[in-house]
Image (tube, rainbow, N blue to C red; front, side):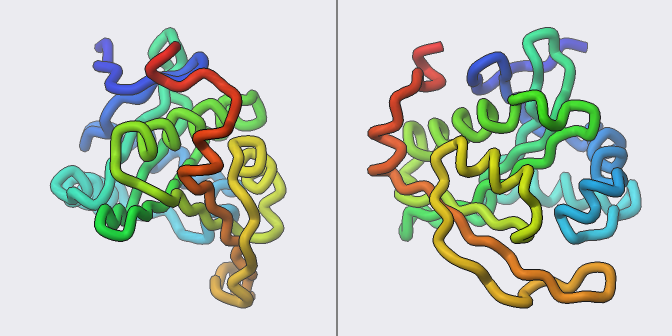
Length: 185
């Protein structure tokens, strides 16, 4: 079934996340690389469905599947913990295992920051990842995010502590980025 596209980027589009997407998300989160990079264990399918249902009613977040032009889902992206009064939000991106390292991550993040700064009253988009997650750090940097620091020993995963890199993109930095905006594509 064709999914409605509610936002677009370079060679990608977003469709709202639905409860029926739980099996797909569970498969992506069960991938060993994703489990290591996110530092969380995959939830049960029932638990994931319940979480998605809660997120649908949560007005502090927006969750989307990222689609190729042919409608193939290639990842999950979200604006979470939206704080309009502060103008801050956290970006979350989880690519499908078979679509990693194909250049879609930067396009998806560009579209997400266009949404945050062009349609929402955000001033700052934050992102966090393990300091050894070179793929995520590379994608975030290519999308204009600036490394701001390290939260030392702030994540327990697989029996050891990990440092978390904190990155952000400010509205003023987004405004000077020389690239087409989502609404111009």
